Amino acid sequence: MSEETKDPIEEEQTLLVPRDEYLVSGIHIGTSVCTKSMQKYMYRVRTDGIFVLNVNLTDERIRTAAKFLARFEPSQVAVFATRQYASVPSTKMARYCGFKVFPGRFIPGTLTNPTYSGYIEPDIIILTDPRADKQALTEASSRGIPIIALCDTDNITTNVDFVIPVNNKGRKSLALVYYLLTRQVLIERGELGENEDLPETVEDFSFKLIRD
Amino acid sequence: MSGEITMPSCSSCNRIISPSEEGVTKFSCPNCGEVLIIRCAKCRYFGNEYECPKCGFTGP
Image 1 (spheres, rainbow over the protein chains, first blue to last red):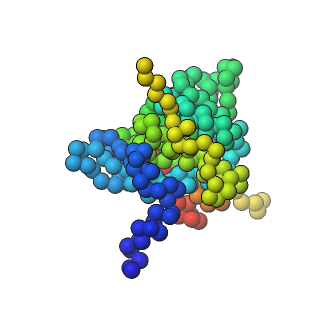
Image 2 (cartoon, each protein chain N blue to C red):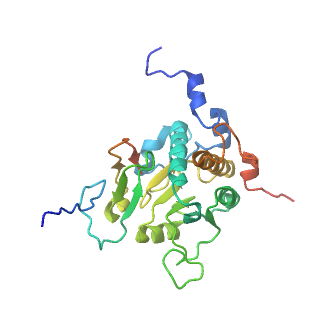
Image 3 (cartoon, chains in turn brown, yellow):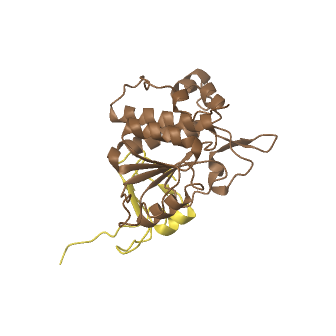
């Protein structure tokens, strides 16, 4: 076998979860728009015009992001999630890893106004969507705080220091990304074994839809 | 005086960064963690790529 073609079984083992699990959660589904800054993470364009993200790159980025986050003091990491679907996964991640979490509306001045009671000075922040969490992005960039962001194909990576290319709109997709990030951060810290799983499943990380 | 001062420079554009400059961020390489990456406000705004000289990691 030549060096260029990889054995599919070997490739499967290098991913954090089986490829099918990635595809079922829709982590690779982008939007009908692809910005120039996100083109390098794109895999192909579907016939209906939807851009598809490269799952291998997403996997690689999640690993690197976990390595990056594990080097910081847990209390100095802040997670912002304006999107409703990200509120549960981000809160669970913060609970396992000891991060600070701000689900829902971002109060302006949280990162810049020292007279505000909820003022914080984190060493690094995680954004669920640079467009939805624009105020947090602006404040963090003015203060020189490094920013990790989950970016979809329609996001612009202005002021973002580390991009994780994923579908940041899907309920299952967000649950899987936060689950994998949490697990990898704990593995990097040595609090979890290499092949161990979290006590909760990906399903527990997802936002629950209640229907009448 | 024989002491030399090394001024910090942006990892993307190599421009020297003054101490009073705002919007500059400094962090260790996300991949290897051994090299300090410095990004000036302009390179952050335009999303210019940075590269780790040790492990070759490119971001953002």
